[in-house]
Length: 444
Image (cartoon, rainbow, N blue to C red; front, side, top):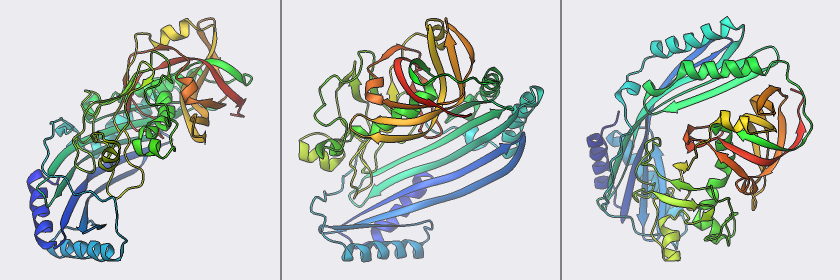
């Protein structure tokens, strides 16, 4: 682990050795370990340890960045020289802003000793419980159990310094039978909060209940999306909150800020300090992160600003900027969607005919200005009739506008930490949605 003091020591060397007008240095990395399994056997255990040192130099209006995974004195000299050579060959960056000076950052606990000290043997024992439960039902499991710990740091020659250490743990399993599958996932900065056996039991239950899947016709259905399925679609909305993309008319939110485009029950914030969220407390420019209301009762309230776009629009940067220089601007990274009080069981009980979706996959953007997506259900799709799950069904391909979908949310459950394979962790509720469009059934 690179401590705060060690990062400050290395940064001081960088700034001393650089002759640039301004110099920025950043660290990211740490230790990560992964236990991967398939067919009820562990087939891979890997671990990686390393940090990346990135140095950005400024000469007048020229700026460039170079990086290395070594930080001895010789390597530091080399990476500074490389950044300098690139800067000398680069055109002027007319919009280049001076680097920030010292900032104040609110503390957040992201590091847990329990996760940092977790061993391969402990991961193997947990995974072994999954195998035993699957073998009892004549099913097989595949997936992973991961743990990681690391740090990020950012500093510059004007006195700015920011540091965050963190840990993370994740478990995912797909349980397979002769003609059915079930899936579940869990993640937390504290490995002791992972519910491995509970999540495995959920995946097993889905695989058992979806045996002998039937085909239902394409069409518009009431759907109940579990939280992972919500994240799979919501991830396509978040980059639209870039103020730069809106200004350039590249976002579905162009000319919609301040307007109501979602249902009354949709409120979305970006909040790294939410108790279920995790992440560093500053952005890549060193701007402190803060809670930002993006959507309130369906109305678009705010966009995400990096420093440059904020200056052009007469706004304050929101703490969502990327590394300079960048062409995108800013985007939220700690999404929290307000939930309700309706459980998934209550949603099912109130549905005359509908479909329960565990998750989506192979999601693709077809039309960006209404965020029209296509993709397929996977690993536990069920037909609901008269308030009960009637049977498992073969997977369905959907075509749906996420903007329109968020205008048709009939019920929300309690918000929880969730993620999909293609989406980062978010705090989202399960949703019951009316008139969700399925284009066709699949063969499996």
